[in-house]
Length: 365
Image (cartoon, rainbow, N blue to C red; front, side):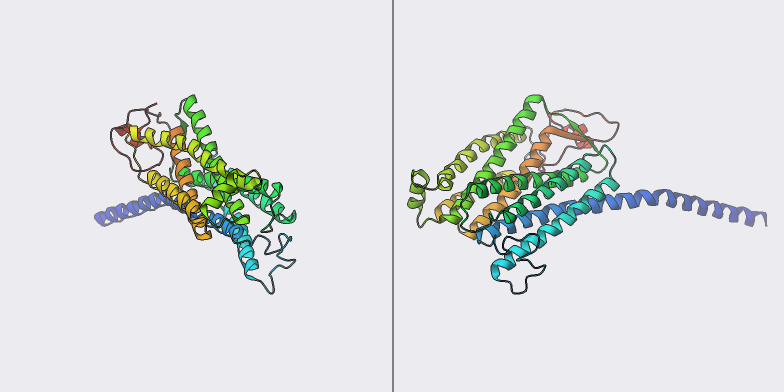
């Protein structure tokens, strides 16, 4: 009987211990699963917004910007257009997907604040993404309400709004990309590792890339309004004093591309020197140059404009992540940042973790 009682007590104690262990580990497991879901949701929102930007470019390239008239947020004064034309369908679809983007980014912001600590950077990049997206919606609404969405609108106001809109779009994608990347770091913390001159060079380099994007938007806008019938005719338009200002501004895009490429090559050389080589940036850069050349030769057909913009968005995201990699490194709480020389190739553009740094994968600054 005594042995039976001892055995029963032992089993009971083991059961209690297992219950306590499960009780203590379950919240951690739930938190980990929630963080993984949040990370995946952030990457999904980034991909979704890339698609929304592409569709917005198609709205402009197809001349469907006035498909809903000068009404906003209603379409031709109706919640759902009763007898929509093809242009109305294109514009209305863009408005619906843009509105859904607002909802998704708002969910991301709330989710980030619930799942991250006060000092975690994803909180603040999510705030920046939310503000930029609302600004995106405001600029789009002003274009409609001020009646600058017509396919033949050549005013300076329309061009200015397009520049502001595309610049804001690039900043939005950057904020979303950084939010997803920083959420992917798990419980690691970010720390600044770049020297002042590197920080300044990185900032100027990213600004130069934004200028490339803005001038590219102007080129696309001018090509839509003033289509050329041949490449020699298009070149003559660029340098003729009688041409519209939008045509003469097209020459700024290749000039900006040459200046911006200096920063891109510097960034690639930096990663190559540290043996942190990723194939994606060289591939994206080569594809972007090839598509830009084809756009000039084929006189910017709509499908080629879409392909060029898609690669440009992907290249911009890669460039932002690589630039952030130059500025920051990650580490676990309580562990110092190390700056040992890299000893092996790293084929990603991700932030360096403390484990990677301790193996010799940190920045050499």
